[in-house]
Image (cartoon, rainbow, N blue to C red; front, top):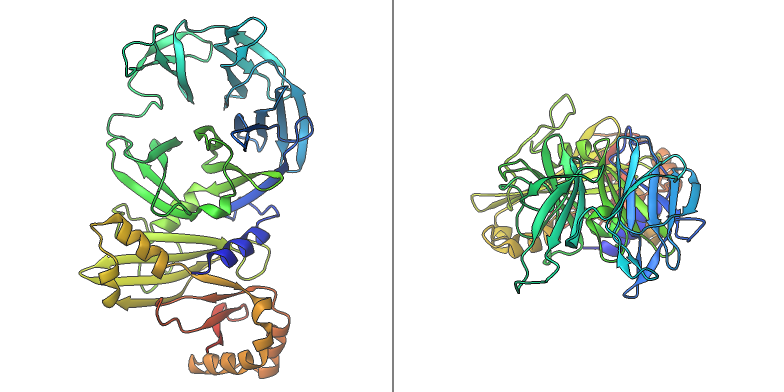
Length: 454
């Protein structure tokens, strides 16, 4: 599969902002610059941004720095302010206030801070500081809506191996109660290689670390009993490179969007993903066609042999992101694969195939076999049109024959003019061992048309 071309073409299309009201996926870039941009430090030879959050009004907040700690605020158009602050730690937005847990070491006083700091997000002023909220050694901490959870270890560092306790503190710094875990999860939620991001409509959202397919970004939605009620898989390369050490505080849920902080060579990259759109698409399981209402049906019985893969790009070159959907299901030793395109108004089936031979490559009882098959036989390959423009004369004949075969009578000169002015990309999909060829998106008929077949 041509993942390099796919990733590069998508990244080029995601540079500019698009409307969140219509799009499932948006990226915004902010320059990495202490004092004039997103503050950062270098750690273990990599970039580090200590604090990140967004509020409910479209403002982005960052905390970091090398010798000095900066707190900066952006809107989608750029930097609003950047100022130095006393304290270093993760930040959390709640009810029009930003909270910083300052767990830094004071080299002059030779003491560790354990301070809960409230910050005015409008200007970065410190509203209050509750110093040293515990006497115990803090191994880790995490913000949840109910307060600050501390993972504590006794100061005597015994027994060995260490045991930890968990305590919840209010946002005024007062002890509330003991907790079962660092993330406020009910006993049934979670699992191996699942890392909690936050909550959505009473459910718990996790991202899954997949050591078998590290270039994927699986998201899992669970209820309090640990039942998986939704799963979607994104291309991890699209999100950008992680900051060290890929902290959970770089993943936030606000306004039913997932905000992911990553980077490129010189910018912080914030990806904004509509969870409503994402999980609606990931649960669409109606083969042959989508419902006539053009809304996706919901299905909650996702398993390893029933996977949806999503790719975001501007297919019809209208400046808005579209969604390419690949659905894979194994049932009774038969593989069913369907491809759909969702633009702003409609959902269109663009192809499908059924195969029994491929079942031997996709053992559902072995996660590695299934994910290897998903990568081998699933997503739509994308190619740069400029690499194949020299085939345009052949493409005219291929396209006219393909259109005629499907009952469309198009003027040849009209189709030639369309190809000569085409600014999009080319696509290949279908059975991985006998793909039909390269296809071009033909906007007047809103369908893929054969571009070339060797």
